[in-house]
Structures are given as C-alpha cells and as structure tokens.
Image (cartoon, rainbow, N blue to C red; front, side, top):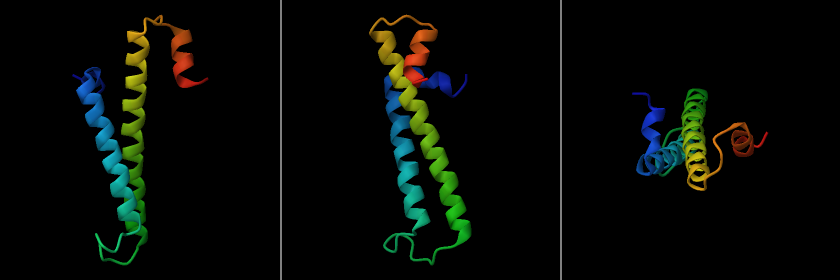
Length: 91
C-alpha cells in the first residue's frame, strides 16, 4: 500500500495536516534558533536542516490540502475529469 492511499480517510488527512504544521513549527524553531528552546548559536548546518524540515512540512501540507479538496469535489458530485483537476490546481 502506498502512503498516498492512506490519505483517503478524513482522519488520516487531518493527521497529515497536523504533522505538516508541526514540521513547519519545528523548522522555524530550528532556524532561529529560539533561545528558550535551543540555547545554541545559529549555524549554517542548522539552517540547512531547517530548510529540509520546512520542505517536508510544506510537502505534507500540500498533499493533505489537495487530498481534502479533491474529496470535497467528489462529495459535491463534480465530474472526475480534466476540468475538475484544472479547477483544483488553478491552471
């Protein structure tokens, strides 16, 4: 089973969205670093790590958002076709 197949259930979509937000929070705290969380001086390596964590967070947020949007269009009885995909992606 693919990871994307697990997103068909609304509870999993919410969990992925929460995980993405936690990744984004973690990346901001890591990049700073926040003195009350990580009392270390900033470094290039930590900034690179923060960028990777932010990318993971953004990716999980995008996947869960598009999955929720597609599920909503299916519930609203939109046709499963190219016009629906174009409407969702904004092209």
